[in-house]
Length: 418
Image (cartoon, rainbow, N blue to C red; front, side, top):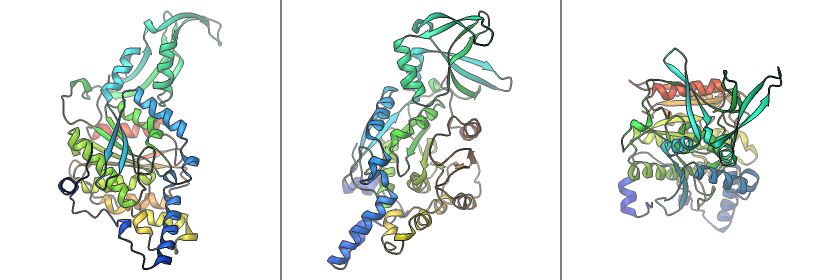
């Protein structure tokens, strides 16, 4: 998919919104100024976009990321190369909930327990045809039970498509009391019984999450988050902005906004996803282009995940030694203002904050909250707290997952996979 010529750019990228200053607009007055500008720009980019700099090896392990990419492809992911308006190629991955379900259906039986409150607790067990029955003894009372031992094929599925994606599982879960049977029990959690099932949806637009990674990450690091969306009936588009992963070019604030807009165009024009069905999910620095998109595109929903209010403030605090030197360069590199964007977001808004976050100060979160718009008719705004740190997954945290489910269910975006 390419969006490169001027006529297409004018037609589809036209917006009254200012993307920010393009770094190409900075014109040094002489050779010395040009040299200082170049060195300063490279320096600040190394701090702000470490995953796209010469330090990327310290932040992104290529072998680990390639393995994660293969795991995403293994659950039905499709690699997508997109061309930005200014000619750079960016890499993405598109995943469908239906494809992930088809893989699970091959190896697993679906089970549910009625909670008596309009919800059911969902879990999966490995199909008997992929298991052998082994007699085992309980450590507690020495009683014996049948254990459903997965064969090599099912074991590979469990390792690559369940454990590697952070899906909660118990290798010796209770499958039956009488007779006593144990085996792999894969927990999917609670879901409302009245939600629409994904097999009931027709072709066309359906809920889709666009994931924007943080400054030291490639999208493959968010495989657990992707799986969480898929298991909630929401398709996923993951994208690496330029300089990250397999994407070409070099990032600035202006360019990363264009990159996320390019992914939006792919979802909108190529796949027919409507704005109201789209969730743009930005973690850390990814919150900048994510909030920019949601502010410009009416109805697009937004999740800000452990991110800042205004990145210029964060940059001045984190890099005080160079803030005066590069003051005139900063706008083209770190022009992200989530707080200002929030007032223009007309879709639903979710904000995730981590209790032990040492990167994003609590004052930044409070500024985000202070800038939340007055709730419009039908608009949902949800604050989600995570008892964790700036990095790492919150999808297996009971409290945060419950809040996440509430947000998706109230907005009508969640659907039943099983």
